[in-house]
Image 1 (cartoon, helix red, strand yellow):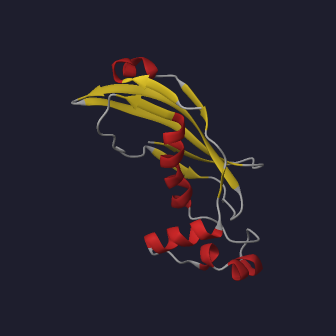
Image 2 (spheres, rainbow, N blue to C red):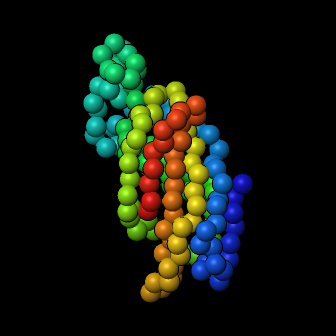
Length: 144
């Protein structure tokens, strides 16, 4: 469910738990497209036969940055600030890839707005985001 807020209410959003996104399956096709986009064709990602035979994960895994980039999709499912014409990603304060995402796994994101700071021309949001793997005990963590 998407939390929708008005621009005028932005400062009061600190502490808001946005809940969780829908599950998304990480397919081999998505991994291959990402590999093409970033020119990273390491076999552990794009060669299912070799990854199954030789990797410590028992099969191909998604690039860590693919998992991280899905935050953009998930964010749009969880939150919309009305009355804003331009939204940009300012950066990431801390990211950890604490467990691999195997091809075929499903992932989703939980997000909590940790801080809202007024800046020239708008607001800057610090958001605690957790990308979790279905059935997993570890998560990919980030804070943009």
